[in-house]
Structure formats: C-alpha cells, structure tokens
Picture 1 (cartoon, helix red, strand yellow):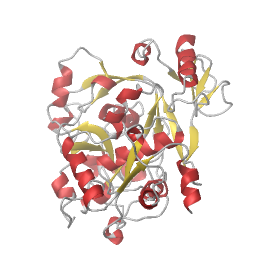
Picture 2 (picture 1 turned 30 degrees about the vertical axis):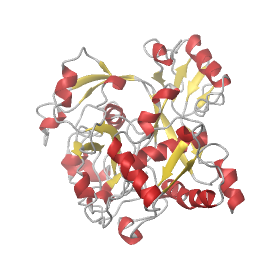
Picture 3 (picture 1 turned 60 degrees about the vertical axis):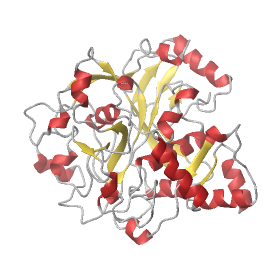
Length: 414
C-alpha cells in the first residue's frame, strides 16, 4: 500500500493522558514498521516520539499500538538537542475574517484546511543548533582536501551544501548570538538544507512547515487574531515585538506557549514556510472542494521571491504578529548590504534579515523517497546555479555527503 493511501484512513487524534482517542488502525502501524525493516533510513523502527504505553503525564495522541508524545532529539555528534511536540490532526479555517482588525487582503478569503498529525518544534531553531550546521563548511573543506567521503553519482542525492563563512559576523549577529536565541538571517534555501542535514543525520524526516501547517500550529485551536485572543494590548505578555524587544531577539521559550505547547509562534523571529507568496492564492484554494488537504494547499515556488515568512518578529509591530498575517519576502532588499556578486544563496545581509528564522516539523507519515528533495533542495534553477558558482568557482560554501557516519568522520578529522 503506498504511503499516500494511508492518509485518508489514518487520523490520529489529540488525547489527554486519561482520555481515549481513535487510532490509525493496525495496518498503518505494521506498514510503518515493515517499511523501516526494509531499510528506509528516514523511518527508523525505533521511532522517536512513539511509545507503547500511555505516559503518566503530558499530552499523548493515541495510535494503534501506542502513543505519539513529545520528545527530545540530540543532534548526533554534539551535545545540542531540541524538543518536538505532537500536534493533532484536524480541520481549521486558514486566513482572517473580514472584520479582523488590521486584516490585509492577502489573508482571505478564508479556506477550510485538513491537516494531518505532525510533530512541531517546540521552539525556533537556535544558534546552538544552527551553528552545528554552519560548522560543516570547515569539515567538508577538509574532506575535499583529503579526498575523504567524495561525492559520486551514486551518493549525490545525499549531498548537502554548507553555508559560506560569514562576511561580517558582527552584523549577522547584530540581534544576538547567544546559544538560546533564535538563529536568523538565513535564506529559505539554507533553512531547507538544514532540514536535509538534520534528517540524513538523525534518520527522522524533518522539513519546513507549509503555510497551512504553520498557521494551524500557531493557532493551537484558536480562532482569534492571536492564539491568546484579539487584543493587541495583551501582546507583550505573549510575544517579543518591536516595542519591547530592545532591538534584540530573545531566548526562545521565555514567553508562554500556546495551547499546544509551542513557544514564540508570535514574534521573536519570523519563520520560513515552504510556500511562495501570492495574494490571490486563498481565492484559488477557495474554488476547490472544502476542506482542502494541507498537502494540496501548498503554493510551490516557481521564482526566487516573493516567498512567505510567518509570525512576525522582534522588528515588527503587533499587526504583523497575528496568526493569519503573511509577510512576502523581497530577496533584493533582504540581500541589500551583500557586497558579493552573485549575492549569497545562504545568507541575507540587511536589517530586515535579522528578523527571519525558522522552525521545523516532522510529519508522522514521511513522504516517499522520491518526493523528499522538493522539501530540501533548490526548487528553481537560479538558486542551484548561484550555489554551484559560489562553491565551484569562488570557493565559498562547501558541499558534502551527510549520513549517520558523518559525526565519526568529523571526529576522526579532529
């Protein structure tokens, strides 16, 4: 049975520790475990976040044979870890109603979306996490000098690019670089490559959320302008925004979580999603039978920009932090201070770029192997062309193979 065939019949639900919950059915679970036994590197039989007995505390989602729970994932080869929170499948209304204060036209008309079960990062990706990915530049460079772990036609699909070294670190870190502050200033391409690196390293499939998935998670079941209500006067209790940020990002998790346990969905760093921005996209979705499956609601990019970042940042005023707010990107502006030609495909050099970070998700059902590249790799030829030029002709940035053996290979280098 193809993975896609399981989607309609397999719908885990949110359950309290004492509650019941409808299961996927034994077929889905056995299929998943059988798939792992066939050697799929991104669906290990020892599934993080899956337990066979209901935990005494915390939220659990019931599936046949066990429960989906929050988990902590250590990045292999490091002492850095991050937390993932299970989010229930369900239906929600994406966009803002006509009478919402500060509403913009690109937030409607509202659309009904069906979202499958997933884990979502409890926090935005921090500098502690992102700097592990940045460190690949030196490691890959040394591998190339010593002809270790070469890229071949057989393993090229597992190649990841490492971002070039910072041209001016003091500028990139202008909003802060403490380990627990959100990492910022990376392009969407760099964020996607981070998720590829993390996935191939851990054996779990991670990616950026789609726009619909992000809003569903941010709302946490709410229908108000913010996940805590409608009054922006209450925002400072829940989010870091321009008026109170002191021109800095702040440690993740300092503000209260939403109803599903996710912090900083409003403010601190705005967050990349996979979608291109089109002000008429919701109108297009509205013409389809409702609800629209989240997987079918993605506006896949066909040009460099505009793309979408969500949630607003420490640089923004309250209207930009609303759950339905969509910020279209302008790469020319975001790379405005970059002195290079072509400009970096991994880094933004602008004040606005210091407000852009990202959060990861992990779907309970990973996509087929052939479909994973669209979540991870360059999606238009222009990005790939610039990446190749920067690495192959200019020696800025690196590429290398990522697999579970990478940490040991790096340690051997040292």
